[in-house]
Image (cartoon, rainbow over the protein chains, first blue to last red):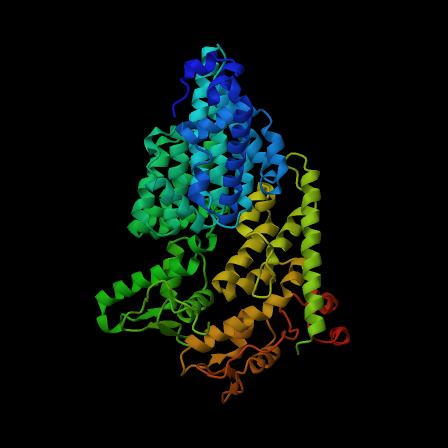
Length: 394
Length: 226
């Protein structure tokens, strides 16, 4: 429709807008009716999208900065009607989302009138309310909408900052938007890996933005969290790239980054250690930041001692195979104890036997252990099946 | 062995305990004074962690990893929390050796009480592993195993039997556990109460607690054995 240029919007009075809305004063009564209809239609779309969990319809309801004709005409309707809050409260289908809708409408109205600071402030309230609601929804169906909100909050923040700067005030809204973004990442990063994967997929395939356009801080955060996920998924080369990026660009002075900053080298060390097969470095990297590992979903996987022992046994197996191929499959427990000591792991021979027993029981190693002779005897063929081992009796 | 009333009492007790701990943590937070740690705060946090042990533990609503993020650093680094985290880790990895050694060396009385119902599950897992992976021609000496599992040898023999495993004796009279037996099975219902080497003083106090937490076995039996 392209009704109004920004300049015109700034200069028009409400009456002029009313008169032009439908095309004349005689139309006023019908125009109010039309405005009422448009607002109600939007509210119904909103509640239908939520009840049917239709992510793609839902996202179009938030894309303020896209200047879609639909939202622009809604904004006009809101500016005319002026009492949308009453409409929101009228039906339980949408009154339950009042915390999201009321500020969203206010934001739209202000955006239309080019009051960008107010538009941002209201939109920030919508974003926070949306995040709360998002946490309550059982699945990630509203990810696309969350994504649109995250994008728009940044755009609105930039416009608001421009307005502040032009009025001689200090621009601070982008910082606020940044903390909303952190909250979003926090919500997603604390959740399941599955949820994170959906986000990452939608971010990486969405064409509505360019990753490079985001502020550096956001890119660092994104690369850090996705890098951690890559470690969790054992995609070490991808993890290496992402975590190195995060380390390279993160600001070591920032207090928030002190937490990230010391977490990132840890993950990089883990990745490098695993790639190089440097078990000592791995051990140190895992030990240095044990507390941080606790907060990482999948803590047990990354701290798996039997897997270190498994790697170690594998090394011995390889060494012995070269010395005497016929006896390669027999590994003395004492030798493993010595090797673990070198790795700065203190374990006695009984504990090593216990670990071997568990590895064999979980089908992570094929063979048997002999308590009397203190030896573990590996199967000559494929003694190390893939890591999908399950306990025999489960 | 399995009494529905006992099982339901046990479940209720655990639920009450979880709720009480949660309220307590809220009180700690409400009275937080910078980085000060209240007297028993670390131990009570460790009890919450230990409630996540084993297959019997009820779901707490949120993953433990999320809960950990809210725990203050001084509490997280306390020896009680380090103990609980180590126990959780060793139980998740199946490292029964570390589980029992660490428990014998470091568990407080309350921690031991919380862990009690789970201890025999770890012992059963150890038996499964040894039975599965042990060399058939070298039956496992019960004396050695009893030291690993922190249990009296005579109790271990009963325990093996209750898991469907037979014990044999060599020429010198030493008791041995033959491996690769096909009759292993988890006993139905809850395990009876067995000894815990190195924590005998707790054991006598814990007979009463064990009865409250729904373990089988007569309270008076434990008292009479002191």
